[in-house]
Image (cartoon, rainbow, N blue to C red; front, side, top):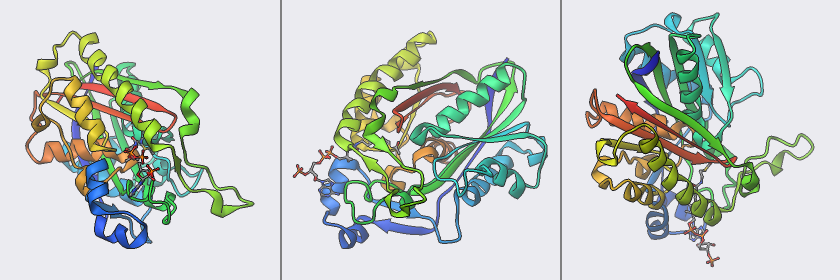
Length: 316
Ligand code: ACO
């Protein structure tokens, strides 16, 4: 039994934060940000928006694309680090908004690899015969986690949600979906939960250049191994759908695969790093733009806090 993509959807908030806006907030420049990251703009969630409301909007589009209703779902998994509550989970809030009940619903904490991690769990449920249709969503409001006076983090992150419905299939589909982690580097990238004695001490911390170095090394071997372990050649790959953290990391990964940048889905110039949502949004935009077509071999990869990494090789 395999799983395959039945439909995708995404949502990004209306408000745009440009590099020019950031020049007014911290000591930085459009030139520095574009050169070091590739990011030009990000979307910022409105005061009334949450990880759950964004997940809901992305999920409605995925359900429509899959021609399904929420009652058809056997499981809901949300990759997020920015839910409003420890409980209820974003997944349970989402279930309520979708007007369905009964199926399992849970959140999964894997930072920027949230979408890939959720996809891996969903694929395993389906392969084991424990679910036929699973909604996976990555949804994060990272803009609220950054110190607005810290130029090393506030320039990087934006808000959004990406959704995908995986369904049981006799043919692939998902050839492989894998997760990895290296907790020995956990101190390099941290988002504290609220210290109830000191609520101000909860901003995101990242040792950017060290994370950068590990990300490039980890992803370079991860993507090549994923292709080879599944008996494919690099030249079989049609599209790379990478985590959108830094254009230099994406370019290094594509180079390792011998893939021209024209075959890489890149949207970080518009959205920055949306953490758990990033691969889901890129996948949806790649499909809706008509770039990714049915039958194409695509590789999803991500890297983030934990440190976690993940990949998925899929025939769309
Ligand atoms: N504007 C101007 N200068 C800046 C800015 C800024 N916004 N930010 C940092 N600088 C300065 C630094 O202070 C430093 O100055 P110094 O040399 O005088 O000390 C200089 O620029 C170089 O800083 P680096 O941190 O070494 O710059 P680097 O080229 O590594 O780029 C970046 C920083 C963009 C953060 C990069 O390291 C990166 O993308 N890292 C990986 C991020 C990532 O993939 N994270 C994982 C996912 S996130 C998650 O899981 C939630």
